[in-house]
Image 1: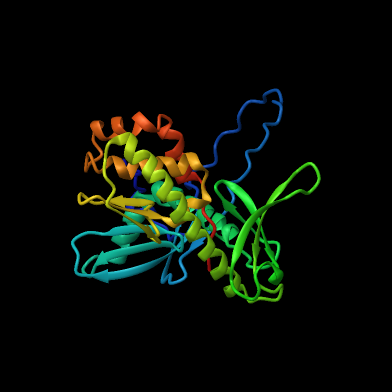
Image 2 (image 1 turned 30 degrees about the vertical axis):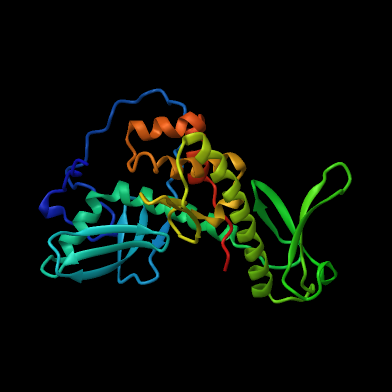
Length: 301
């Protein structure tokens, strides 16, 4: 990114001062002109504040205020990390504060864009948190499922079953959990998660068998994963791990991940030959990948 032009040294200002007007003789009066229609004023950009919870420094970048967490250590360069909490900066011990702030201003566009993206993601994550109670909703195979607490569905054990409730012209899926309506949120969460994991294993086993035959590979071991950043993995010995949270997505997305990992049993890379194998059984790869990136799964805490 090109470095923004610097102001002359004799006009250096602190971060929040207004830029001074150049002083000079009064200009000569201009000849009278016909009045022009007033231009519609442009709206002023709204000020946003992005402040890391451990911020020690604040800096104004463009029209926004950024409070960042600064950590010094034995390193050779200044590094930036933008996460859900905000901006973190790591700098060598010998670098002055002015140089750190100058580096931040140089990358201001990138930092502000990433902060806005992370702020939006944080709001979406907050909206994805499940309120564990009777009547709460979670996605299962791409469809919303309503949690119904009913101890009559199996005693006081934390069992669960899925059924379709005919509610007028719009039937809905309900997950009947064998818990009383006053059950603690943690109890409900654990019961639902246990049921989802059982369904995940059943579905994954079926889809792995289907695609292993079509791809001509041998699956030796299937296990469930709870990884935060990976939907699946495969090893050269024929072992495959699939994230149980995939059951929140529709079958087309699940099939893509299953086929992706099984294709690694033929090509342990992401080269053109690998993608040809995946597309041979899942033609609409791009849509499935975009779904995994765009949709958020429920937050179980």
